Image 1 (cartoon, helix red, strand yellow):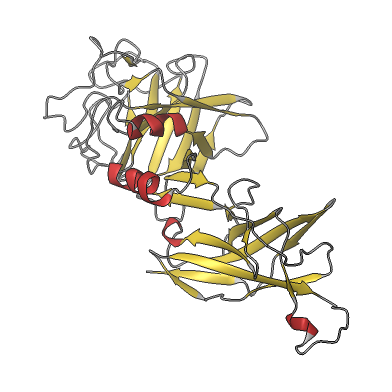
Image 2: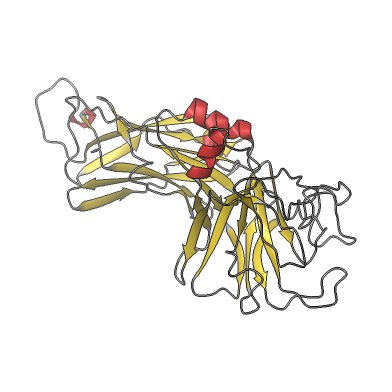
Amino acid sequence: MAIYKIFPEQDSFIWSEQQTQNMGRDEILEISTFDDPRPTEGNLNKIPSATRALIKFKNSDINNVINNLITTSSYVSYLKLSLANAEQLSQDYSLIVYPISQSWTMGTGRLADIPKTTNGVSWTYCGSSGSGIFWQTSSYSAFVTSSDNGFQRGGGTWYYNYSATQSFDYTSNKDINFNVTNIVNQWKSSSFANDGFIVKYPNALEFNTSSIQKLSYFSMDTHTIYPPNLEFKWDDSKFIPGTSSIVNNDGFITTIGNLQQELQEQSVYRFKLYSRDQYPARSFQTQSVYLNTKILPSSSYWALKDLNTEEMIIDFDTTYTKISANTSFNYFDVYVNGLEPERYYQIMVKTIIGEETIIIENPTYYFKVIR
């Protein structure tokens, strides 16, 4: 029932055609392959080019989640990027992510800078073009490699024995959602240093004169609600209803007993759900029959939707958004700092009873994240 998101400390994209230019503060991360580029720096021949995205999350943020928040022995991690634009995509394509094997500096450049900014990572350099620290192109350490077109040397280095691939088809969502649990586990065990992720097209598509594709994703400098994030999921739900009655048909009402309209950005909030029969049977007792509460079944889940865009921010998940229960009520926890501040979020509940799926979407069940 736990989902926690952290956000990058630095990101950029690098372009083989502009070998020393830095794009560390661009609002876009571009991943592309070109078949007919403009002449490159100092080279009047047309050479196919490519762009790759670099993203790094703080070690302290990752360790905090793993060591202090995750309460179970297993978890999954996903690298998530939101699509801003796509051009000339193939019907089917794939992207791949690797852990970077050299440290790099984000810089303050943008693609549109004139003159170009060179104070951070680029296709050739790990940092400023004056630093003299190049991306390796030979004499690699164990399990490290790179790839370029033989003319524009550089483009990053990475550990090739750990990776994740995501495939897309014509109808699939084009947002990136890599399962990078194996990479995060290597950082956790200190098998190699956390220098972030590099996201690119597979080698067979890059620098391919028969291929041209361009994907643009929102960066950490975006002015939207879609920055990259590293999402952790784990199941710490508990279903211990004791002798409490379980809802067993669709004739019930569920309310959030402790709903607050504003939640602090850094908080963790436990929502409490109370359910009862919509039309309770009469009985002889000292309190109203409308106070006889029941527990939603174990096949119940929560979700969050952005009220403005109506996008699912956290979707129903039968493993990681389970609703817990004790003898008095159902509950679930929301890690608020994984949500964009100054936004309104609607709480949704889904429960499965027999063959029937019931979704509760009360327009009054919402909250705002405040700074």
